[in-house]
Image (cartoon, rainbow, N blue to C red; front, side, top):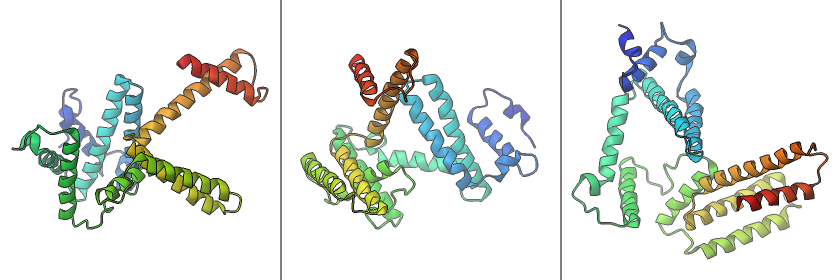
Length: 270
């Protein structure tokens, strides 16, 4: 029986959202587009919504963040609805599993362990617990279980962290900087005689070392690059605004002139 009272109840909370998704996916009365979707077709939207959450946070826009969190929650509801239809799992089993995991991973909050630990010790304990979880899943390899569809820079960092747990790591950032200089020199020296595929491989090596350097400096490489992207966008927009105000186009402006405007904007920003 259709639960229209719940569907139209603004205070229906999560049960309302679950019922809306059930109705959208109803094979007889649901939305044709929603009915056709599967895990693979919805996955890109899930990733996109996660990025839009991050974007709202970076812009410090709480109104947008509220909306984007709702969009992301809808993705979870979507996947669990499809999982339930196929008999794999339900929203209840998904929430139970994550709740159990959080309790198990925080014995210093929900168990008998002391909370009197440094952040570093808590991180180490967390990794021990996660390692035990991987063993129970029969994941034998050190690098096994690192999602292949993560953004490449983020996956590089995670692969390096896994390798570092077993001692495959540089001891300090200086060693990474030396490797960075080595990889940069190789790319510059060899770019004229390498095929495009080989240039791509060398560029990948260089980016991989950069991710490693960020890890040693305790910098999130994705966040660092997002900040730089935003900075470049902001400053370039100022160049464009300046040219528009002076009645000039990019074609009529030399690189030196554009660079001068860039530096002026940079100076104003402090």
